[in-house]
Length: 113
Image (cartoon, rainbow, N blue to C red):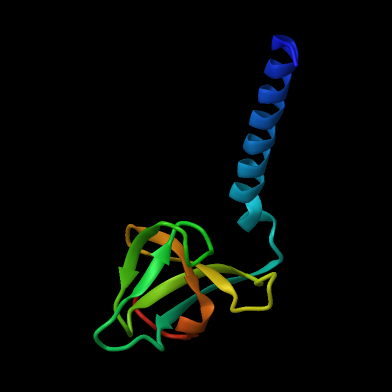
């Protein structure tokens, strides 16, 4: 393999890595989902624990905040889990915005957010 072929191979591999990262980054925007636009309470979390808020809809994603049980939050939208697991919802309260597992939210119809 000569230098030109080596450079082409490295450039191709770099392009594939960048394309893969970009596809992963926009996945939440493309996932099948539904608008909620309503308040919800954090439920199903132990009284001595908190619900982690994630940057992306995945348990391994970076934590950007947390909420105690019975905290009211605004649910913007949710996405359907492609693997058949729980849905993930994009929530917001004050300066914290991120994704939580939908199984820890209970929709409410009258609350102070």
